[in-house]
Image (cartoon, rainbow over all chains, first blue to last red; front, side, top):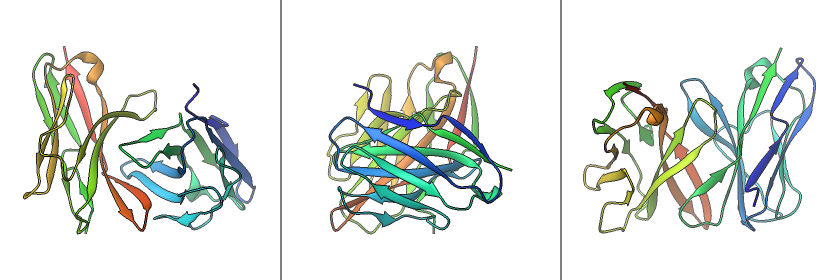
Length: 111
Length: 116
């Protein structure tokens, strides 16, 4: 099993460009999450989806949109990237029990 | 108020010694879960150990144990017989559930360096 996969692994954008980060899980989990990790800040929740067809804002949703395409896939979109969105982005999924499983992360730089 | 507090930004420990990483939390939810994750320099988040708020015994997983003191709202990670491969960032996290939705809040982490 691949677990949680994320694409791309690295991305460089110019200010104002848009892009979509892709996430997929093969564990049949209902819940999926997007986090960002900044130096000294730990991980902060951007958006989450408790089930297919539902999405909710987390701690830092401004500047982002999400789509829960189906049970497997949960994408994160930056419509107009800003330097403040330079970060490492993690996707995670959960079966609602003991733990969340994380993808390998996407390192995004916005110039 | 911070929901998860890790007061040790960095620690240096001699190889083979035991190490305790501190974590305190704040919640009014009677049902919650506490986690520890390890993040090596390669960047992935590795689940280490879980403690539920109603669990009677402290969780253990191999060399990892969680010293859960509910009244003090602390959930310290203890690593016994530390190894060079334990050098990494360690994050404490708390899971809360509201109306069936699950959220995980992370602390700012502790960078552990094992000295040979």
